[in-house]
Amino acid sequence: MTLTRRFALALSLVALMTIVGAAGYILIEHMSVLDAFYMSVITISTVGFQEVKPLSPAGRLFTIGLIVTGVGSAVYLFTVIGELIVEGRLREFLGKSAMNRKIHDLKDHVIVCGYGRFGRAVVEELTRNTVPMVVIESDPAKQGDLDGLGALHVMGSALEDSALENAGISSARAIIVATGSDADNVYITLSAREKNTKILIYARGDSEAGLRRLKLAGADQVVAAYQWAGLRIAASILRPSVIDFLQLSVPGRESEVDLEEIRISRESPAAGKTIAAVERENPRLRIVAMKRNEERLEMIPAADTRIEANDLLVVIGETDSLKRLASA
Image (cartoon, rainbow, N blue to C red; front, side, top):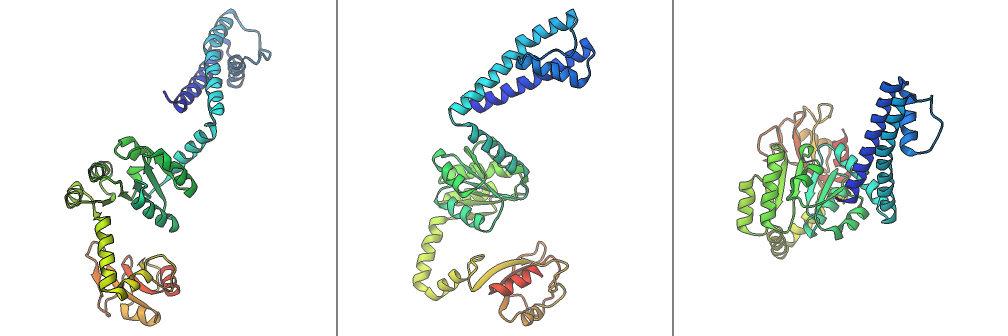
């Protein structure tokens, strides 16, 4: 049994014995709840304070039994606490408890499985955009990096159901499966889909067979990391100006020109206006795509298309213009 589990067990035993002791004094000696808990605590802790009132023979026998069982539980708890302090793991234990509470309170967050080169790039970008997330990583050597980044994380294998559950799979909105093994990624994808049928699954694959199986397993989007890198290099040779433009307009980079998706609210001034009207009011901005409800993304929508509340617009333009439209 791990030290942290021993601590939880010892703490539970002491709490249980305190409650049992208080209940016994209430039933046998007819004490008030406060007096009963006082008697139970001073008996288990062996501090030797004066009794609330003289005990009856039955009360004394009960106290003897409480000392034998309760004091042993208290000594066990103090021993475990000593081990935690001696091994320097008390702060670590308390830190994990605080992290687990934060993860438990998360809703609509993103889970990243694997903190390798691919996963690290994803985590850094999500962190920069303050997206709530939890990282699952099996390599203990990477825990220091995750602590330094301030990322919520679960140390363990995403192949285990407990790791996914500890990361809040049931309340997450998306999961990124980014381990270095196609077989593991397929298994994690199946597990994630089983535990949350509505979650969006983005999975990494390194082979054609792996990409095909990830799609069959239920991944919403699969990415061939090395294939994309190769295509990007080839494109930079064939179409260097296009690549320069794409690098300039990477979403969220706070450059002069940005590319963003904007959800139109009911209160937005853009709601009810045509695309042409919105572009006239924002000369340095262009709407390049629009998605309405469950319809497919429409590229280069017609200028006379009327924008409705809850429409999703893909917009390119000056950063300040994009911020004005997004905050309206």
